Structure formats: structure tokens, C-alpha cells
Image: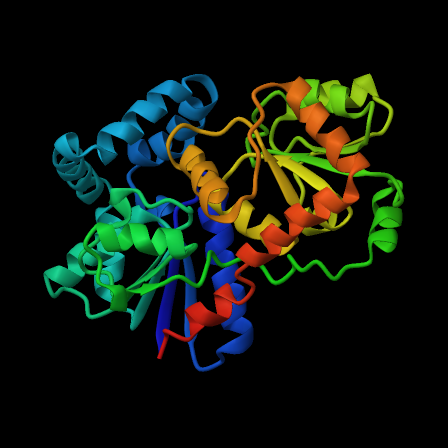
Length: 364
């Protein structure tokens, strides 16, 4: 049985989810022939440029404009127009990917991005491919763009996401609220002392991980400087080389600086709290690591919706208004370990540890 796992590489979240699914199926389903494919190399150069550069520019410099686009594509009175316009642009920009789907005609397509799902769905509805389409929604909210009529199964992050899909007209038989897939390395049962020694940090000190995704967005320098007075801070600058250079030169006490990393699970395992952006895949990972999140620099739209849903349904995650509030919260939780444990219990209740396994069960 031939299975395509496809994503869009703009931002790291969709890719990480796709890689987690691919890794699990490779290790546990030897009956499958797998392909892991990024859509963007198939797109025309201008479309690829917009995805690779437009999105980071918007969320970094004019997030209000991104929020407006998100609202316009979600609001019922403008949704039909924006959706049809997007369909037309996507079709003409991604014809090479469409031909690839037609030529290969996989038995299953697992998509972790709404664009890939839309293109595959349109081909299914026109009877140009026979593939079964599984759409993995990589946020805790559900934007209308995720809905594609040719989808056979939707993988939802939670019951709240499932309920949202139901209100949008998706049949219950097509929804599996098994959670956002994550890598098997994100397991809490790791030796903190050994990892701390490996990373060159103090194992017995209250530790805060500061990590905001591949762009290194947000006031990380100011937060690190403030929080380092009350806790050990691990700062992941990712692709933000200017931030990495500044923090290296400043050489703050109780601060360990990292660039782009491939061992996020190790940093999580030695931390008590994480300060991060509320991206869907990041939330799935930190929940499974039982790591209490403080959310900052939320993108208007999907990330603010993630915060709202988590606060409403799971009672986890805080979004302080300023750095002073962040510091006060950290001091409070550091001095009240029983309170922090109670919050972690809420996190454990929201965990979906078998997300990959349950997704694999639909491929038969």
C-alpha cells in the first residue's frame, strides 16, 4: 500500500507533524510504502517565495495584517470569496504538485496542511485520483480552510476541535479526535540530571525554557534578562542569529544560549516551565512532556484561538500582558510547587500520547 505524507515547509510545525507521522509509520507499518513530500518545491517560484518569505514577514512586522487576512477568510460574509480566490491561485501555482498526485495516485494521502488537502480533495471530487485523504489539523482551533469535501478522515487535536468540525458540517464518522501527532522523542521519562550535565546547566535549579519557534520571535532578550534573576533560563534563538550574538556577548548569569537546535525534547526534559508561542505542534509536544506553558507573542488568528481553547477546555496555559507579569508568575510557581503540580495535572489530562498510533489505525 502506497502512502504519501505531505506538508508545506513554511514554518516548522506542519513539517514536524508530517515527520512524526512518517517516522512512526516507517517503524511500525512495514506493509506500507511511504513518501514524505514538501509541496513548495512543486510550486511556481513566486508562490514559493510568498510562502517562504511573506508569512514570516507578516507575523514578524505586521501581525495585525495577518490577523485581518485570517478574519476575512473565516468570516462567513467574506469566506466564500476568499476561498474561491485562494482555490484559483492555488490551482495555477501548484499544477506540478497536482500532476504529481495524478501520476502517482497513492492509496492514501496524509496531509498536514490545508493547501495540500484542498488540492488532493479537488482531484478526488473530479475522480482524477482514488486516494483516501486524511487531513491532520495542526491547530487546536479549526479555520474553514481546513474543510475539504473530499477528505475521508479529519484528525482533530481535541474534543473541542471535533465539536467545531461538527458545527461546520463535517460528519462525525469522518472525525477522529486522537490529537496532533508528535515525535516519539518527546517523552517525559528522561534522566534530568544526566541531561543537565550533558547540556552544561544546573540540574537542581528551577529552570525556564524560552523558545518561540524557528523565527525566534518575541522579546526574548528582555525576558531572559528579567527571568534570570529568579531562575535558570535556557534561550533558544533558532534562526535569529542577531539575538544569539547579542545574548552571547551579554553573557548573563543563569542564562544558557542556544542557536538552532535538534534536541528540543532534551531542553524540555530539564525545564520546569516553558515560555513559548502557542503553535499547535509545539503545544502537542509540551503537553506530552508535562511542561507548563506561558504563551507570548501569539499570532492573531490561529495562535490566539489555540490559547482560548486551551484555557476554556483544559485550564492550561497563561498569556501574561507584560514581562513583569511573566516574572511574577514564575516566582509564584517556583515558590509553590504544589500549585505547579496541580497545573501539570491539568496538562496530563489533556495529553494525547497515542496520536501517531491512532492515526496509523485508519490506514487499512
